[in-house]
Image (tube, rainbow, N blue to C red; front, side, top):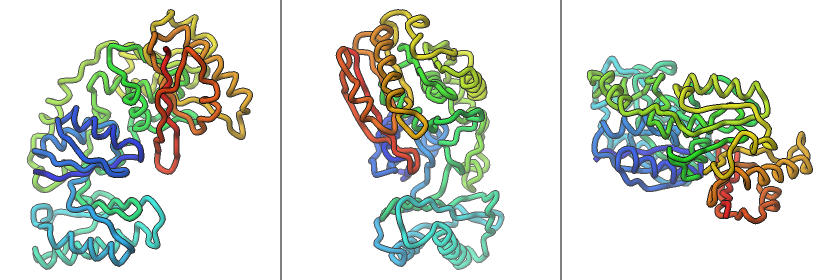
Length: 385
């Protein structure tokens, strides 16, 4: 079995587990910001890398452990190298680098870990294979990835080579948008399926609608960007990658979906349409300029299954009284357009005002914390009775 680790934002671990089961029929174990799993084949592992919408990185896992301080971390990291044979991955033509991501407070920096661990790899390769491996910070053939989350460390080979949450289709932006992984999580937490009608009433740059469409259609977020680190790894240089991706892509179904993004600003609607085109889903979803107060003129009575949105909240620039008025209108319109047992799945940075305004026929059914890096959000699911 091949041991691997998927790295996620905090709160998205269960979504990554769901994807593992759906995409490659694998069960995993959730840690904070990480999911550990055993894969039957590299074929399945690479397929997961290509299709996942919830993870930042996937690493071929050498080891994971807890540590007390920097000396303990370096000592255990060195022990990891002793147990792993690098001959399979290195030769004289292979370049490498060490990359470290840290979460939490430490008395050491990421660059210190990269430098020290890189030096240990150089010494090990020289001792075992008889040559000094080349270091390339710009375009390495292999990336040794060290993920540190507080007192836990995960070490392995990076199979992605970039942060997957930074979608390459997201060129056109808008103030206050959330990242794509979080948008996808909001869609999945809503329980959305392709037969349902999903509406984002504050669509901004269209990311939630686009992620829902990519999920429903089976089209990879990487369809136009197949630059993965695993393609450069020594054991797989001769693999027929064109055929590998073609086989997966052929299963995508770009049928029209009942997904609608609405925004009060025309520039946001235009940004959404352009991003959707770059993602390859512009012909299967729709966007339109509309204020929340006019939803009942655009949508038929009791036809919407899900409203999924990152909603505004009180801030230095937006008064609480304005937000209360906006929420009141949202619930008024939702009562008309939503089906019985329809769900509002909303993301906010301050849930207090929203919860104060939930009245029958609506009820709060779920609350949770979701994170995007250091930014904390509150997820709320509200059901229409």
